[in-house]
Image: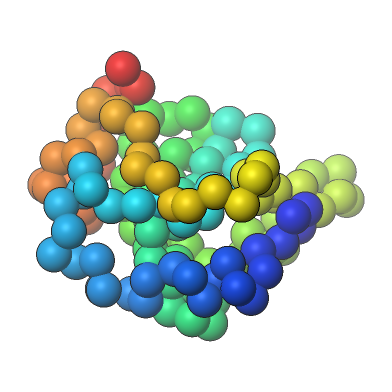
Length: 119
């Protein structure tokens, strides 16, 4: 994995279920992992391996959804023998709100599937 998250970055992420009462439009994205047309946005972390966040696979906006994903599984993804998942980098900025997507901020999508494309 390129740009693997540091222990400090992982420690700064709220633990699983800590943001349960925060509306989706106010949740903060702490890490963004990506490869090609796939994106995983981390909102919560169990402190070991499991994130809760939003995943868009293969630019498939209609089946993008909130759910759980594993750091170890992201690390294991390879393309043509190379470690290919990267973590979005840049300045050490604070967490950000997720960009507005149709369906993303609908509470009914917490465990369902939002539809639509980004605005």
